[in-house]
Image (cartoon, rainbow, N blue to C red; front, side, top):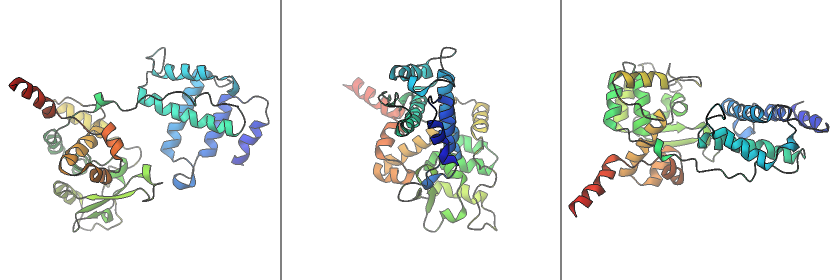
Length: 311
């Protein structure tokens, strides 16, 4: 029945924006992964992008009436501050532009429109070095020590010392993934499960992580049991309690709380190991690491200035 939705709409003389987007999203729901359907998180993100298109153009806008100029105006509107726009960052607006391209490519394939008005819009660089900041091991260790919850301690340790994605990669860890004898961890990343390795990778079980794992491991733990009993699930909010603890310690909150912990972990590991090996451990490419993760630390800024003073 779903397969006939767009075909039935196509018979109409004019395809309206909201009708098309609703039908297209309905076709893509469910399945996930290699079956071609969207996962719940992806479906929610695509809905937000569709809503932004409808919000700007109106639900009754005919697809063929949206020009390349209109598409560019929409993209600029996304980045303008409220109340004249959506107030999104360039990176977020670029992600929504990619979604719009995907929607309208389908419309072209279905012969609902002749050209994709979003196709030739240039997507600006999405890396934002100003939001990459150094978060020292000492700072995170102070935070870890301040938490009473052993699961939260482990989350912070995995994020800052091993560079795991939070919450997606930590929440699905089982005791079968942790090999204390071989000193390795098997990590599953849903965002790369379509790759040849099925989203799995092996990385070192760093010595500093072991005490935090031992603190949460029950005596009767089974291999299939999840490491995290409470701090897991797609709706888990770890950012709020972390912010509260940062403020209680009178620290300055840093942007992109958990992403910056991952970036600092990668940067530290890359100082001791070849970058290609670190990227294999953390599950990203060297190119992505250099653009989005590697941090220039304060001591690296201070060194050249000191050298110049001595000359």
